[in-house]
Length: 114
Image (cartoon, rainbow, N blue to C red; front, side, top):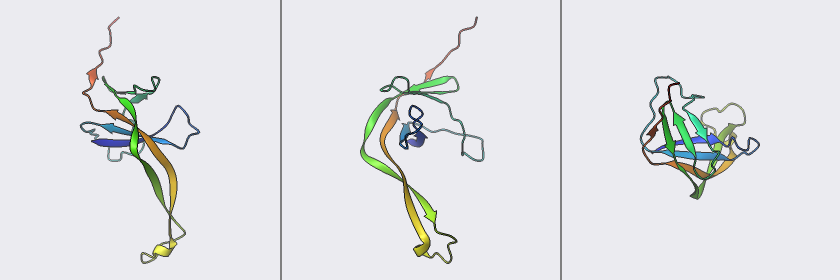
């Protein structure tokens, strides 16, 4: 399973993220995956999310996680010298409580010609 973390665009003020779980794998010829646009996520039907990647669409389900995830970021208090762990701190970024699960094969989207 591929897991992706994504911000909740329905509520931009929210610090909560979604976990997206997909079957299969995504491949890219880009050297860096930072800020790489994979597709478009449609959350207009809150219980039936959709992802469109190219000409394919995945339909999923929104579900609560059995155990929430904590996203913890490494924060240093200055330069780390010789692995001095006294200067290392961790900060809680957010709690992830829901996932969008896509476990079926994608459907092909065919555009009509005018």
